[in-house]
Structure formats: C-alpha cells, structure tokens
Length: 190
Image 1: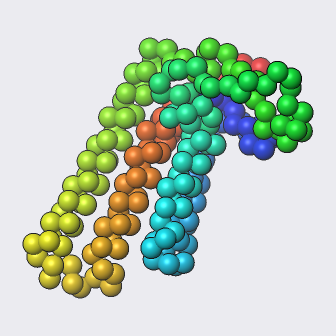
Image 2 (image 1 turned 30 degrees about the vertical axis):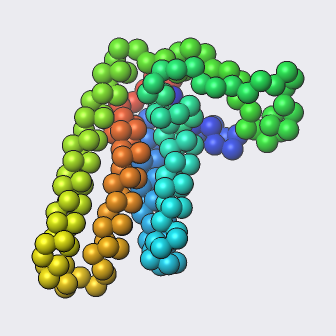
C-alpha cells in the first residue's frame, strides 16, 4: 500500500490510518451524493451509467487495486502498461500527470499483502452476498407477490435498479476500502 496519494501534482500524506479512513468516508459520501443527484436528474433512466463511470474513475484515481493508480497495489501483481514515448513528454510533465515506470515493489504483492487482499475480498463478498440476497428477495416479491411492494413511493423496477447500482459500486470499491480502513499507521521512509 502506498503511503502518499498524488492528486494533480500535490502529494497527500496517507500514512496515518485516520487520513485513509477520512478518504474512504469522503469517497463513499461523494458517491452517495452523486447517486442522489443522478436520481434527481432523471430517475437513473439515462444517468445511471454515469454512476458506474464515476466509480471506476474513483477506483483508478484514489483506491487502486484493480489497476495501477491509487493507494492499493494492483491485485494481479502484473507489470503496469507503459506508453512507448521515446522522449520525455513535456506536456504531461507540465500538467503533472506523467509517471515514470514504477519499481517492482510498487506493483508486486508480498505474502502479507496477498493474505490481506484475500481477507478483504472475503469480507467484501460477505457484504455482496447480503446485497444480492436482498436483490433476489425484492425481485421475487415483484414477480410473485407485487402487492408487498405496492406501498413504496417508487416502482419496484426503479428500486431494483438503484440497489443494483449500489451493489456494483460496492463490488468495485469495497475490497480496497476495507484494506485502506483496516491497515494500521504506516511508517514513513523519508
């Protein structure tokens, strides 16, 4: 796990657990606000897909895990793809978005990190199992006993779609959030 997050050229210290927890809380608060805002736009008829795009962007910039970038090392341990520039891209340097090829320790996981990754996925999938059970239950009620859902102010289809959006957000972000939340304070190696 990385001890600092580089955001638009500014380095943010993430060695302290409280900083990582604040980041996790602000990510999920931001995604919840975005989901509510997209609901108010058009009841997720066309804007629901933007929630998924935002989730992948947050994952890439802040969390990491499934790709190179963010605080959590890539789960697969493969060498990140690098562009084939022959010269240093000065525009990318000026915009502070150019990153040279990382060292092997930045993307390879040791045994402790693999164990933590596996445990975080186990915990995340317990949560996702509950979410999928709730989705199944609502879909079952909608098909077999629609009167059970008649009291709600929104249709069962919209409710199911919203719960599926939340489940996708959790599936993409929860393992990394668990790792960031549970990792103790890191020692700085400056």
